[in-house]
Amino acid sequence: MKIRHLAIFTVLAAQMLVQCPPACADVNPGPCAEKRQQLKTYLEKARATGFGTGPYDDALEKIEYDVKNGVAEAEIESQINRLTKALREQVQNRKTIKASGVGMASTDPATLKKLKKSKQQIPVSQLESYMLTLVNNHRKENGIPTLGTDGTLARCAREHADDMIKRKFFDHTNPDGLDGFKRAQKAGFKKGVRENIGKTAMGGNGILEVEAADARLMLSPGHKANILDPELKVVGIGIAYDPVTWQLRVCQMFGK
Image (cartoon, rainbow, N blue to C red; front, side, top):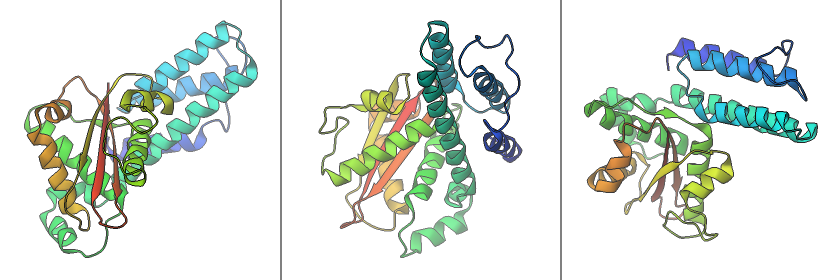
């Protein structure tokens, strides 16, 4: 996404639900019609900038379905609030990636060299941005369109990476019996997902560990297939440090 597009989208997010335009025939008459119309207009403008809105379009479609079927106003408003929150998180996720110096590391050897020598622990948000750069570089090298980011998947991936550290397991299925698909659905991502997980045997400031995890994933046929699947359009990347060893746990969640 170009910076000017991000700026437009950020302004839209800041204005969301502040002043709603009058309801029109685009949405079903009924509860919260003005807010639903404003969301529809917002998504249309976001989509025009190149922002992936698929899951949000689906969520709004469900809201419209529920309105037609007489679901109570309180539930409709609750769904709108959840959708609005998810959209704002997605905007923040995009802003973080744009602002991160590590996100440009692959095209800036001097910056990357400096980071590798640093004795400071690199924030996980920057490591996640760097891993996104590596993943998209693999796709570019193979003539495959790069992945956009999805805030819901990013949050879900970070939570799983953290959980693997906290509860000391390494698996797609957590101790509660939830695999990647079920965790994504619970978080609000209703489409199918593919998931890669990884870990490092060494512990450092994070940069070399991300590169090692990326290399191991690309050596695994199944993980590599997910990274290079042209049908997949968005990704959420989560990384967590082991507080004792500084080793990493990585979770990549891909969606259409």
